[in-house]
Image 1 (tube, helix red, strand yellow):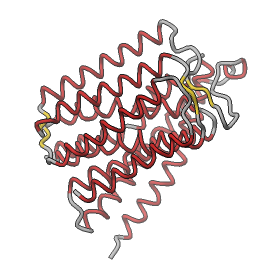
Image 2 (image 1 turned 90 degrees about the vertical axis):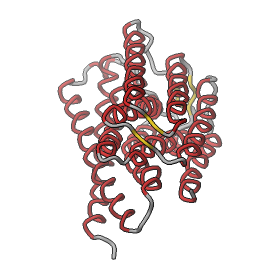
Image 3 (image 1 turned 120 degrees about the vertical axis):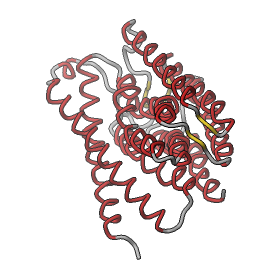
Image 4 (image 1 turned 120 degrees about the horizontal axis):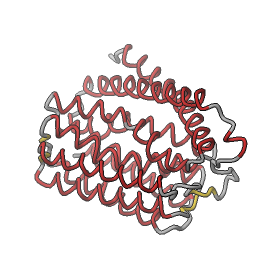
Length: 325
């Protein structure tokens, strides 16, 4: 019998994610325009780290309970979902071109952090020391981003919409008239609603899955991963539909960097993570997908709807493979 409480929580979680994402994208976009900060930078930092909050909660909690497979599977699966399904959908909705070094640099940071995490997981264990190293690398990345912002490299968006005719966020006269207090409150409220919605959905999904006898690794690598990535999905899709492709793409890239360095590092620092051998194939899938995504993003050429569809197919097929392990 299907638990009614889990079904209700699932529905409430989806609703909260949608409402929260709209608040978050609207507030963040207006703040970026008013402050003259690139929407991409907002996407890479505030939006990306905020929508990764569910991953922090789930992976750290799993580490405390000795569920290494859930903690690591959540990170791996979330990044596959972010780069494959979410970025793919963004490109299908609003094809864009990378035009500035900032995004290319951050895409390369995403690729490098994925390779480092793969090396750390090669022995099926992430120690506290390795977790601390991952956290230190995240600190270095953030420091580099701060330097770029202070030097003015963030001026203007690094994304240009190509097919939908929507304009990226700009710091124009109207933007500078935005009331910071109101939009900051809107952004904070949206982020809080997104986090609560993500937690409701994940708890319900895990309860339904475990009651059906699905293994811990599959739950972590697929259901929990997809659930904790729903804030990124809803936020990016809403942003793309509004023409805010800088926030949408920055959200995906920033979230992936934060997940492998911050979430995995913090979970391991809390308690060493022992994982199943299935992580090798799963992480290999993530490395291959990251390589493909890095090439199409970092080369500076236009991403087409066909490439978006390929990313979606690549990401979705991961779930099929993981379920068969």
